[in-house]
Image (cartoon, rainbow, N blue to C red; front, side, top):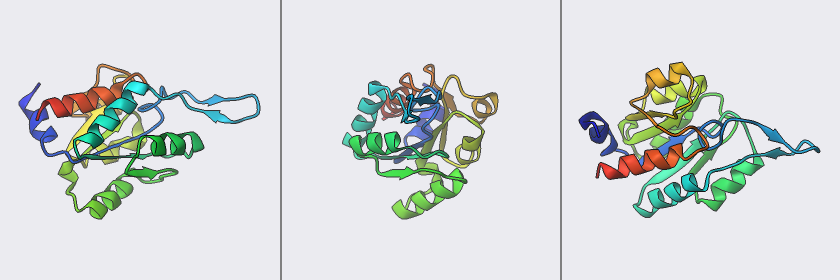
Length: 163
């Protein structure tokens, strides 16, 4: 692991992320009656539980709203869930203020343009492997795994391995 990554990772107390394209594969699934269905990777879930076990906090900031996500967030004891966010950086700052953290103590995992401003203002910016080029450029670290395929777990393991 690079010294820069571990230096940044050593400060992280809060892991924030987008949902669609990060915790999911980014595809939208609808049942025949119009109900939205999301597919989450159990490995990401285990990673988030592990993150909480070491005393860290985590949350999701997403531009869309979904009851599926609310259920999964409760199931995994998310500390924060912001749905329908028009300004992710604003929400990052609100959460940081709530916890008394500096932005350098926050990591953000993203995949698309609405994530870039938040990513470029936090201590550790992570892009999933299949992120848009502008997101890849903004990242301090790019996962080997795609969104929805364990990229969040990979991120958590990499951060914790720097300890």
